[in-house]
Image (cartoon, rainbow, N blue to C red; front, side, top):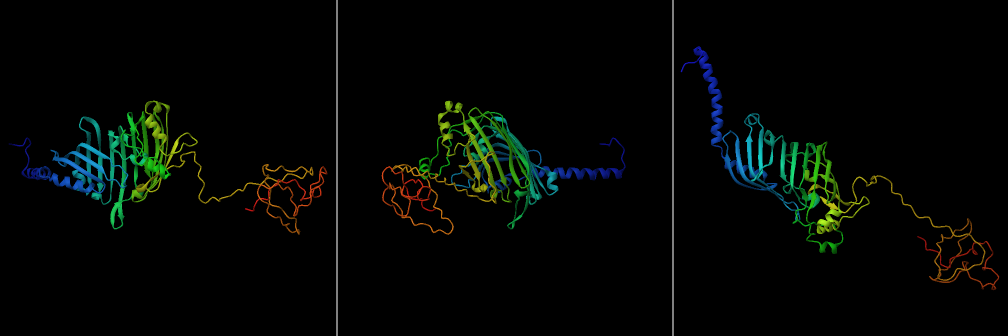
Amino acid sequence: MAFPIDLSPRMRRILRYVAIGLVGPITFVFALQLTLPVERAKDKLIEALSPSYDVSIGSVERGIMPGRIYLHSVSLRTRPSKPDEQPTTLFVDQLEIDVGIFALLRGNLSVDFDARLEPNNRDARLSGNITLAGFGKKGFAIHAGGKDVPGADLPLRGLIGLPMTGKLDLDIALDLPVEPRAGKNAPNWQKAAGSIDFGCPSGCTFGDGKTKLKPILKNRTQQVMVADGIDFGKVDMDSLEAHGEFKNGSFDVTKFESSSKDGEVHIDYAMKLEPDIMDSMVTGCLRFTASETLLKRDRKTYDAINLSGAERRSDGFFHITLTDKLKEMKRLNQECGPNVHHVAPDAPHVTVRPTMPSPPPATGSGEETKPGGPPTPMPPPTTPPGRPMPERPLEPAGSATTTKGPAAGPPPPEGSGATGAPEGSAEGSAGSGEPYPPLQ
């Protein structure tokens, strides 16, 4: 076969070398793909995810394109960190993985993925890219989006105490550096940057009709009575939209909007990030209430919300405070939200004592207090400067004696109007017939 253009022998040698330089690597890549130990790759993936998940993979096969493999029937089950924590399971019908060849040449691992989440729903997908800088020694980045993601597979149970069902739309962008810590490389969540968006256009619920609500109760007797939880049905959500940001060493939920005929729910959530995210301090507030519509549709669920252990506050909502470290987050029956005014920790504490009423002025009318009448509060007796305090014996409670002097004299003649002391003196003031109150 002759070249269409007459080339010199030297030019032909150059083209031959260029062809070898191009065809050689391509042939090597395809040969590597054909001999790729996919079972070994499967075992490595399970090993990498094992600290946080129980992983099950049905089968694995290689694709035609270099760097592509398919995983079928993948199950990721979270490992509970608490005895009463319910695990969540993410099932993937088919996971397509494409490894970037050029990224490998630069010393990075870049993986494109496309997960089909349900066998009979091709729209239920989660796809994106994961890049491990320096094969994970310098950090990693995740950029992913999903549609019709099952809400029950997401770890929302720890926040609200109930699973969430329905189809969610997700958008995740996260850059997380890896730094040396405690003698090994680990992610530093204090330097995380990115955002998380999720929404439910329609058809989402809180509760699955099976999981029982664990109320927040301080009384031990009540705790024993509802130790197994309270039957809870479903609260339907017409729509839901939320946005959270990783920024400047914190994670904040900056937007949470929901609409439902069954009631209202508001979530305020923030974390002060630590290098280990499980050590991050949580500050959050759940405010919710049930509607008359839910009462008519599902009395059991309506009663469960009212018996959740949270108290109805001044804004008409039940409040639950989220606090403590993420790994041991507590749900407390405390008022929270934007209407709560907190006192600064260094603010001085001022104790205000109630002022005792002044004794009634002396009238000199000679009227006696009837026995059994209500006692009149009296201040402790005062002594003018230079005058000793007169001694007063304690009178028994309920005594009908009206004399306030040191010793009671003989009763005055009937009808004289005298009280046994000169009019206007301290001893002759109208009294209550009760002993002086004890000193506090």
